[in-house]
Length: 374
Ligand code: SF4
Image (tube, rainbow, N blue to C red; front, side):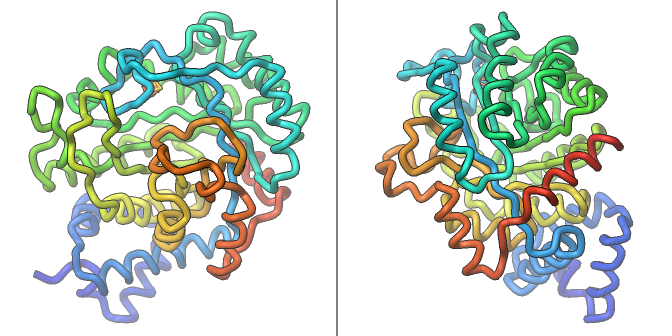
């Protein structure tokens, strides 16, 4: 059977790109067809169309975020996460003095924004001032925009984050299928999570949402499959893409689930990143003028290249070459720090090889200001 892209002649393909640029919505049937594409030429046409749309809105500019995972303590038990409270691992919590030192090192690295991420650590959740202090320190020392990824926090907490200078609030739903959500974000409210994002947007903070792919391979420790077939995975992805549209996010991400040792999904077979790449292109069609990350956390620099070539325009999870901090997925958990190549310099070198460039700080902050005032 032919797919959507192989059926298009050149004129129709150009018209498709024009339609996306003018924000004509995709139908669910079009998304389903795109998620089902396997033909190599059609995949290339899809990725190239996404890059053409990205180029229209962002040109060759790519934005870089430094990742500061400042506390790996968490009270929650997400089935997919290495840092869930039941996993017996070594944990750390950075002190304000340690954060100050890190910020001194980060301020001249060439990143556009600092992403302050934590598990739902009661030290910060129960005493918001502890987190507000971290936001203020980071802004003051680096002078850069700050993203906070604190988990679900109430509206007053969100407003105080804005007052402390937070520019972006990242909170991933992972899936908009509520049954699947219950299996992944065990014991956590679906609505409180969606509401926190809406509260942040209303408070004048840009918001990021994110979803996972690769469920068809997932099995819980009792052997129960999470999503039995690829067609369930496709339904799941469509529901999640549509779900993300509701809060009008300023940044949208997708990541392939990676089995983590010591978690209920540890024995799951790792899915390829093909579905993730297709979803990145579809996100570019559905959210043509929004930021879309290529994370270094899943497959390092080679994975970053594939994701930028599928329509992403931000590189996240940049970690200094000498950093002792963790990533979230950490595909390179066993790789020595000096070999990680997750630093800004290695990323910028690769961007230049690809004919891309680090966008200006001014263009990045213009994006934040424009979206915040919407
Ligand atoms: S995903 Fe976040 S909230 Fe869930 S267990 Fe991991 S660190 Fe905690």
